[in-house]
Image (cartoon, rainbow, N blue to C red; front, side, top):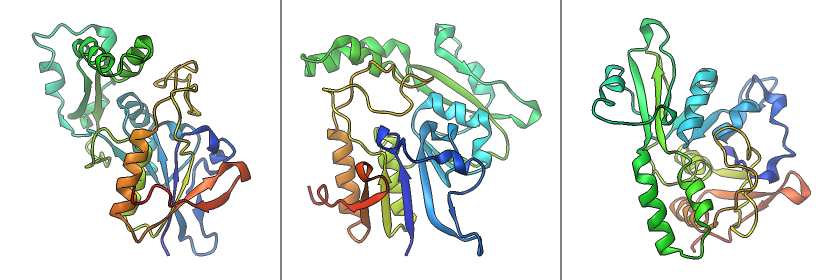
Length: 266
């Protein structure tokens, strides 16, 4: 039975101490060395400890992970991770007036950095995107919408070495890191998937994320998101993998695994 534990970044997983697995896999048989449970984490979880697979959708976090060297310890899956010749990073700014504050570039390290990954969103499109959202949802707080849409505005240039092993995610770009990790686990043959830290936040409450207020994350006073997209993404997964059993960890009873099938077939 192949079991996978997917760790979201909702505050309900704050009791789970990943720090005790700072430099080794979480669930390994001490006698055989075989992995009992395959672990998956999302974005900034690399700050707290070791997981077998790390999924990152956000460009700033991807750059942070790469610079930390974490990708050399575990398998990493990044969105829009397509290395190109490093010269393109210099050529792309010819004729474009992009403020330096929007350009996030790592340093080249020796002759082994002949490639780079370029990702991001044109700052000039932010105003247009905000107008489109407000037109569709006039009751939303414009300042809050601008804050959220501006999160990945800018250009991230990450120079990579020749031995780069990060895998590009071949899934819908607008999916969250958590649901992407669940889908990848299922693609990898998971027969049981345990989900911890998937709290499905609400726009009526403050944002629910254990990393809020830290670099590359929203401020603590930010409003939460509608859970509709998460629910729809989970529904797609549950229907695509009907033979897989999915369990939602009951955070109120800390560690009690409760089977959740209420989204299946919705």
